[in-house]
Length: 220
Image (cartoon, rainbow, N blue to C red; front, side):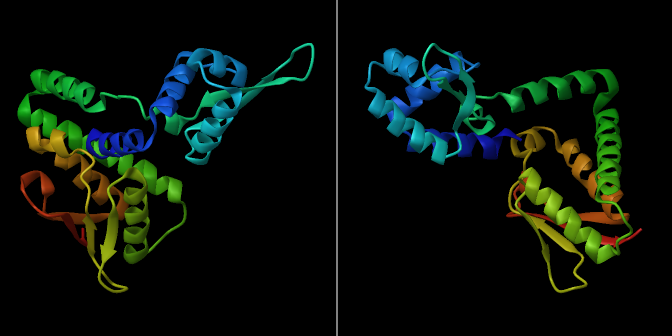
């Protein structure tokens, strides 16, 4: 799950200057927000330079305006990290996920682990389908599913014409986890099957050396 996020996070940080990185770290330590003057003092740079850096970081969606703090004079604007800004800092999702997987496998065994993943995928697939609302035909459900997968980071698309029955994903959001834990793919398959109400054949898998993850849908 962390592979694509880690890459995007590194690219974003590499694009920032040292002062902007320092500014983000300062905001991370002051989660309630701080003023231009406080940033100026903290980084030992002019207020004008602070405003330039803030404008650039706001443009990237990394910094936003927080509350205004009352003073004897004009209220002072506080600046805070956005969710995107917080994601610039390391997040060990994959490490924690592996700990959970190892715990379940010790408890249930390898086959039991696969069953847990299938159960979870089915539950999530049904929840997502219920959120869509309304009755949709197979082709429309595949388009809805592809859109949801795209939002989750799979870089997925429906392949073929109006009656297409294939979805291809160029990014495996569980890539390193799936290589170490092949049963994890059962989560994806169960989710897709429950959402589409069709059987799903996993024709190609990046975790086993494929170029894409390809899923073929068939009437259940």
